[in-house]
Amino acid sequence: EAGVTQSPTHLIKTRGQQATLRCSPISGHTSVYWYQQALGLGLQFLLWYDEGEERNRGNFPPRFSGRQFPNYSSELNVNALELEDSALYLCASSSFGVGQLTDTQYFGPGTRLTVL
Amino acid sequence: QQPVQSPQAVILREGEDAVINCSSSKALYSVHWYRQKHGEAPVFLMILLKGGEQKGHDKISASFNEKKQQSSLYLTASQLSYSGTYFCGTESMDSNYQLIWGAGTKLIIKP
Image (tube, rainbow over all chains, first blue to last red; front, side):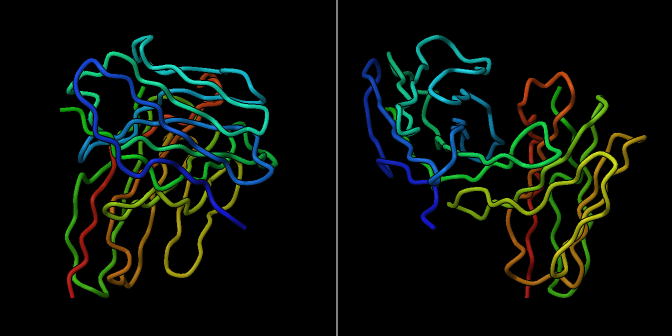
């Protein structure tokens, strides 16, 4: 079974540009989560999509946005890039777990975004 | 509120044991444990559910003390492959189906 895939692997942009990151969940998973992980730091929750709708977003400015497509793949857009946006962006998809409120999340390899 | 992981980092010799703790100020419904190796994605290890049993596979196990609102991850007879950063993700009734992540514990295993 294929895991979560993300593209591109690396992305280099300059300040003020826009970045688009993509994620394909595990087949059968309907939820997609996006996280930002700055170098050496923990996971900061960005966005959660389920069944095509945004269910929750973390404490990030509106220039971080995204969407989920009918095939459950997802896209994260970051507008007006700033230097501090440089980070590893991880996508995770989830499956329903009996007895759990929050599903187990399976992570993709991430996109390394560098803003110059 | 972010759970507190301790220690922040630990260095062991191969074969030694380690305990990583995850404490929350909230009443927890579950705790999820992940390991992230350098340059790789976090990998799911196990989930501890409220009212559930202690979990484990291979030489990695975990417990969940609901009263103390904490979970502990036990790594026995550590192997080089255990190196990485361990994250706990907690959920509570008011976390809106989100995992709240700890800052991570970096584990270094030396031969």
